[in-house]
Length: 341
View 1: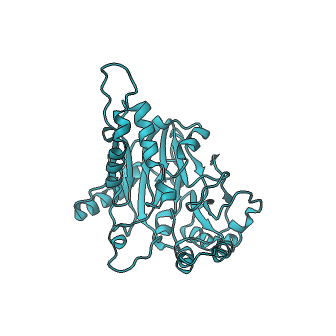
View 2: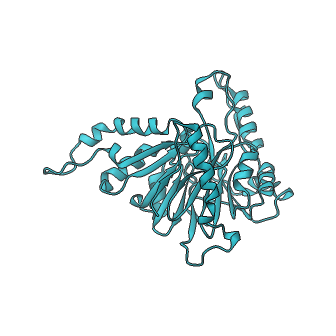
View 3: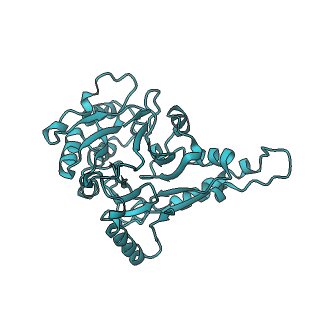
């Protein structure tokens, strides 16, 4: 089966029809609950970076995860430090087939350019890597390739071999900005990937951000396993719908009480503390809200990542799970960097 991109951004009607058709054909990749395929490749989750927010830490890299199926790697977010984390997990860059960006906050896309240049530098002859993300992903990738034009022109060989430019090694696609119900955005012989808008932004009416910024949750389905990533989000029925029946829910989580104390200790007149606290309260998930989401979606297991604050030296991780069991009775694990599930 050849790789298929299930996105037609210029024409909403075409996108709707394609999405509906792919959902109807979902039996091509039955879920594990349907019995699965004993001969199918195993799907493994690797939590590359588990720290939430733009803070730089030593013990938790910023958020990135990998889905590994056979020899193929699918990256979810490409934050600061992702190349080192991939090396730490023994996941070669050249095996990455696609990168899925949940949203364009820096702690999720900060090292996308470095990833693309590293892959180009050592593996330019391989097939194009796909980068799939919110509106403006194509624009970002185009400008990243242009930004590294000086690198393209800096010789790495002596001879006449002409190396293609960075832009020739990547294929970027924007996910539709109005994805209110789950729809398939990518499918190949290994996996089907679906997406839906989550609740991570509040906008000023008429602002440029309101027209462009979007944030998504992703679901990965193979014949034997299903894994849903909430992305960064507040409570969302759309995310619950996407995650329905998943084997694993990979969820962000925030210790809101500690974050509020930390922010109120900042002594700066120019720092919008109240607005930031409001954003954290409305657009992220507390442990109790994670439990409510997991119970509503009927998932089998919860893995917590994107820990906020996720500070170095934390020894008591129970603050990230306290309250989940009021609603969700299944297993809950707090991930660390480079763990495999």
